[in-house]
Image (cartoon, rainbow, N blue to C red; front, side, top):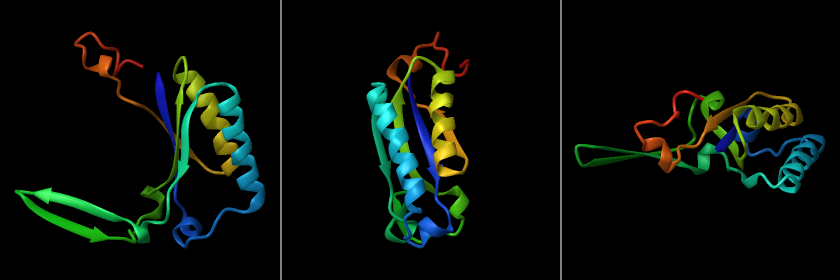
Length: 125
């Protein structure tokens, strides 16, 4: 099962500031441990929303809204995608990342092709 662990943007990351060195080192250690455990698929941070855009298409009309976006607590700051045995294992890794970041992270299961099978447990686990 693949899971995405999402950390949120904050006022500092939206201002283009990097985290303090001790947080960067702690997160780096978690990423290294994920890699050594063989469960890391990728880990990436994202630039501040001021450098991004939102795209909407409605009735064939395209609307592009340049960043920055107002609600920093709703913005993605980075993602780590892991392939693990189950949700509990994903949560254990997420807890280590949350501790390293000193902040909350979100864990979401990635939809797999098999999930479209009518007998799938997509909404069971």
